[in-house]
Image 1 (cartoon, one colour):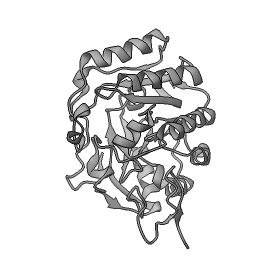
Image 2: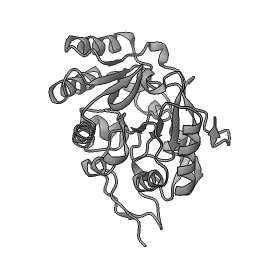
Image 3: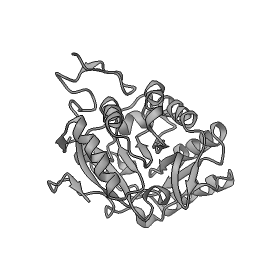
Image 4: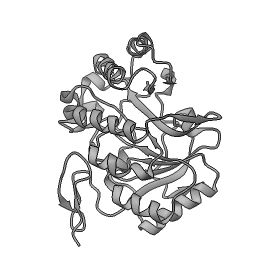
Length: 293
């Protein structure tokens, strides 16, 4: 049977039984399974988020902190049954949720694994935001929390830094669909059970890109939307090839964006200190261990 892939906006149509698509993925592959405490507080909680880092990615961000797995494809091939068993093992470790990181290109395998075993704790779709509306509709019966990045309001920047020419149109419409899939934010004792959190990382030199993202969220989803405004940018991987982002974020840049967020009345969400610009919470992928619980 052919396995032609149209899961992400690139619409490769590649038969992944024979060759990899633009993302680099063929068969199901993951790089790390662990309790993760570096997410937003209502996701990580005191118990940790049961995180599965999938190998490969449909974006090619030149500044990716996880480039060993997103670009270089580090990881371990597993079966759908093994993925279902990982869901069960994570749930048994008393984590607050199952956190699927960069899952888009494995949507079909994830759905099949969740049909085999659906945990009673929330399932988090933690993606780049570079999605199709059709794929977000497809995952609706299986996902409780949507945690997308919203990286760019400017498609020129998206093409330059992530090789994604139509990022804004695809991300904005898929995020609207995520809100339609899960219209209510439900938080119990400081733990999110259902809902949407939009992440945006401020890039050096591009505060207007960030302000335009916030304006779009306010206009289209309202200022009650949970927004996680991130200052954790680090000049890593191939960011050295672009002088405007080959430096840490300046305090004044983050302050400008944060002030605009506050001006528009956003009260739900999260901010970061500039000291978040560190690799302390970046998982160590190259130690040969798949599961760390």
